[in-house]
Length: 362
Image (cartoon, rainbow, N blue to C red):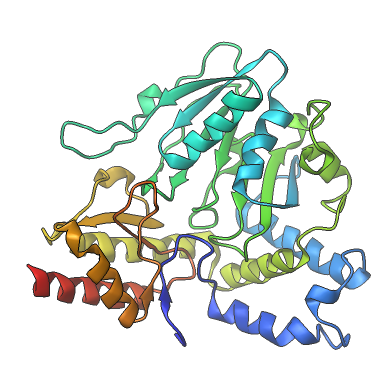
């Protein structure tokens, strides 16, 4: 690790090997005399880069051919609009299973701008004072166009490890912060959306994996750059895409494959989460607000026993090159994001700091 251990929730750290390769190819890509960011997205060379990235993602996630893979400009908030614009008919309604901040943002985007969205509060605080995912509340309503979930809530530190049974109603999942962290069955979803800036590439790229029978139903006023059928028709080249992030995504996919794919990635992520949560469970100086069964492997949200120590905690952490630990402004507290690129050595350094800080202030 050359600079610091970056526990930021996004944009977040990328694998050093990936960044080093991008650095080598930034000025001169494969001997062409120009860098990857200078290359036309319609050139034969870049087309090969783009197609390889899609091929690798399909291979890693085992994406069937009856699903389109779209590489789009923007981030998750754009997809909060794209989902109803593509899937919610005029006069129809959709179900939103809300477990935290980002699924609530998606619900509000739909309800306030595009049509009827039915809110299901699915992560209540239990009598134990902890937040639990309540799958029994994830019931689709008759005639629903789709059901929406966020499988990992970065702000709240909640991750869903089960899926609701939505029957014939397409399940739409935001997986921005846990995509490629463990195996999933793409066939269980109507669509998966994710921003690249947490696990895959620099900010500015969004990927949509959507079942092809759901294409072609966008509202007339849906912008062409958000119309999934248009993007599919043009192989994500309808407009100039974020070429650099797309290229970086391909490098990241290669890195995941080199480590053994998603099964190996899940084992790495389990080990990191068990180390961090295991320490905090044994130390009364730190409080974990999420029930054990739905604690996020990606975003460990916690508070200090004495929150007046927050500024000092962050100051000392930064002095030890531990950055990005401040919690989201919505909830405050602390948050350690331990995405794919974070090695277990970084978590070990963090745990050592947590232990020393607690001992010094208990």
